[in-house]
Amino acid sequence: MRVIRGVPACIVLALLVILLSPLSPVTAGAAPKAAGSGLLELRNSHVEFSPDGNGRKDRARYRFALRRTATVTVTVRTYAGPGDYPVVRGPVRLGKLGHGRHAWSWDGQRQGGGVVADGYYVVRFVASRQTREGRRIARSTGSAHVDTSIAPGTLQVSQDTVHPTATVIDDAIVFTYTEDGYSGHYAEEAEPFTVRLEIRDAVGRTVLDRRVPVLATDVRQTTWYAHRTGGGVLPVGRYLARVSVEDRARNRRILDSYVDVDHRQLVEQVTDVGPFAASNYPTYDPPCYANGCGDPQYTPCSPVASDRFAQGLSFRSCEPSEVGSAETFRGYAPTDGLGPRDQYRIVATGGPTEPGEVDQGRLNGTPTPPGDGTTTSAWSDLNFEDHMYVRLGHDPIRWSFWAPEGNSYDVATFAVEYKHYVPVH
Image 1 (cartoon, rainbow, N blue to C red):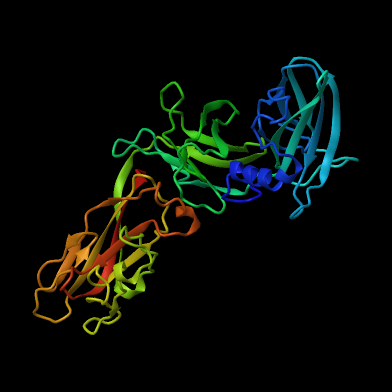
Image 2: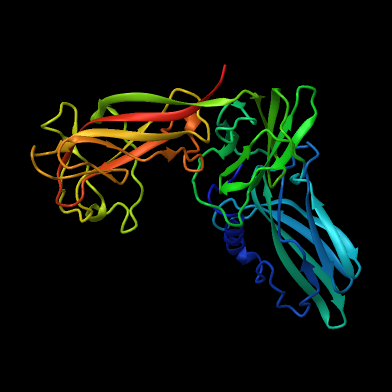
């Protein structure tokens, strides 16, 4: 569970250290300004752990070093409000420790017993040493994130059966784990949780064990072609696909799905949907325009009802938009199982708003013919990287239609041609 979703732990730590600054003039990670500067060094400042008793990362272990023999105490505090930093554990007296490396572990227990609540805590180490010049004190501050539950998520499997011997396409299954509250931001270094995919055969032998790559901050995705790890096609049969999700506090979730390996050949099949009136297809949110998202000046307006075609759409110039004329984004979700190699194209029928004119429109970039007629777009792939919610009801087939500036064009109908692959019986 992320205590503050979308806020990195380092930022939360910085805020907590600032809030706790009245307790000491020493900031986290900085050398003490007292005469004992350099006496104490905290080697790891932030620890995430899960004190739930399951044997995985139940303790927060801190490593520190002393340059001289000193007496060390540790105090754990939380933030309860402005000026209120109650102690939840300590002071824990570690006694007099010699020069060198040392360690202290916190089991997540509060003073008096009981596990503390999930959240962020400040862990302060204080080392004191009596010298001829007086007592020297050094302080160092770290943090702990107590996290005893993993964030919820969903495993999506692109299809139930894979055909590894098919020659018409390289058939595969796409496994996508999406953490709830998907943001879609692409990750570079951040990886708050890890996902592993394990495939087992009917007798429980593991035929694949791999870490699922990062696709985006909240998404992990991998493609499986039903081949052995060392090469070779897997035999026909049912397999268990087990996805293990683990966060940085070692909380774990197991998600299982059964998939089949089938050695039959595949044949291409095109399914026609429609034509249906243009206004009958559902819309989806358009992409964000680079020149200014949400600014009406750069956002296309919507089409209006057509006077030429019943339930059709009319694409006309819109003011004060500088984009040109109206634009629409439509979508469709096939009822058949989806595969990562499936394709689609769109067919639009219509003509200029004023019959006899030469105005034209654009269907996914494909220009309409002069006058009334039919326009067919190029074949497009189902991109599972862009459409991660295919199995959750979102439209994996999407298209746009607009008219260039100065043109006015009406669409009567849209039709979908969906190319997929079925086994040969």
